[in-house]
Length: 329
Image: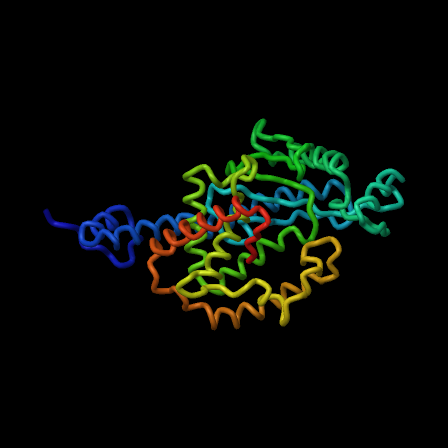
């Protein structure tokens, strides 16, 4: 039978993969893995849809009438590692006038090691007070018709209280928590790391797809959340036996490693300005890309994935035997 000639401008599909697999099984596997990786890449339409939902949530939150109120994106939407069906992670940020807060609320804040100032971030509140704010937020979202039907759920006794809902236009699962200006920082860092070596994005998407397929990508179920999986991929690429594909993370932020006792960037005791830290990161990523950008470019994705799984399995086994062992990116 005659085979249809492939138009170079036409996207690859399953038929193309089948033809490649018949000619070369290894090439067919590589094509399949590329398609899986591409499936976790957002389209311009996905981005536009999310912007619409965020804008609607922001309009509703303005009615809280709190100083500096805003809704920030964080998680996979910021890092770029999401697809159309991925959750939309949102953080409500604002401040409270300390003169209108009770002495008990202020005492709770001081007890947590925060300094009382004229305006206090919502993130300084205790879990109970955050829950009250989120309930008000839920009422406003309903008033503006943002949640779909009865999709609103309250998860206020979790370590990080959240409300979840599906938006009424596209059915995207949304999570809203109380955050601060540092909430998107980790996702922003991940987006920059992906610029150092594009193989990071390819491998991370495959690892995430593999973990989801095996029921291993759910922090709520005590398995690996996506941030944990990303750090595993970073660690593997830094310590790969055939040659490091990423630099140590400390090299992207500091000229010299800080003392082991120094607070970490996101610790409440840290005096580092995160905006300045991110500016340093952006500059250092350019140099790191020149050193590491081509490393592993010719290695098949199948080889990287198999090596990652085997290497990570051995490291996790060692951690179970030696709980004090730490894997550090």
